[in-house]
Length: 346
Image (tube, rainbow, N blue to C red; front, side, top):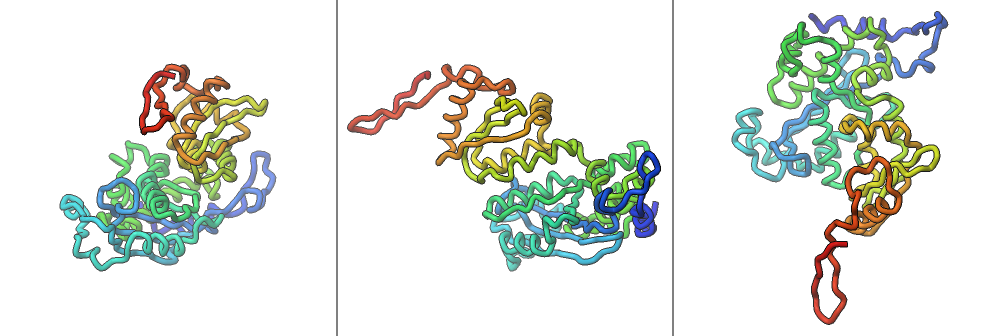
């Protein structure tokens, strides 16, 4: 398979379409045509640490539109910690190479400015996006940078839709790059892998165009396991603060469906409307949720206490834990002349 025909394919796929009864529909009605969307395809190399301020060693990205490369972004990152030997063996990135590189904050700020996120027609793309986007989000959070919450496309999920296991032995980036005839071989270096991902993206779009995937909204729906109606409810978190507190999911009848607490209310509530939420009972709750109420608290421990009391008082149907909060251990701070604490059951 060749990726060379993609620009023509995406142009043809993005022409005005026809609805089920044959009526012509406009671009505005259908959404953003794929040829007008900008894809920021990113790949990261890391120290092997969990997402945070000391994990990144390299960021590589390619900006494409209409099947053509517009610009590249590439930088080594000084993580401020030693890169383990096994990581160097995998990526070829040494401690000496990153010694003079900019730090994580400078690299993150430069990448976010270059990517122009979260513009409506810009999509952040990665192969196994949970890893790369998770690291970008984690670094932003650790550094106190605002994460723009862009539309994300995972080429791993897209490839699984485009090619079955009878066509490719697996959906690893190296396997797919060879299968589609990518001009770049993945090397575990960020920019090379980003370019290979671009070719996989273009080939997958070419395969899916005859299936009706012609607009950005079609594409995100095809590769996203989260129903569009549920994902749209992320807006319920927009007004929440990014601090500790208690939250309640409520139904149209104003019934409290679920009570929870979090160190960051906005981030926690938004996470319910992503692919990371796998619990069936919670998914059913989200379908009936129409509002989210909150109480901000000075500390997380106060939020936890309020959560338990609300669960005991309101008995929300979806809460599974804390059914018997009176039997939970509490720490009672004694008020007296000297310091002390009295553990017990409350």
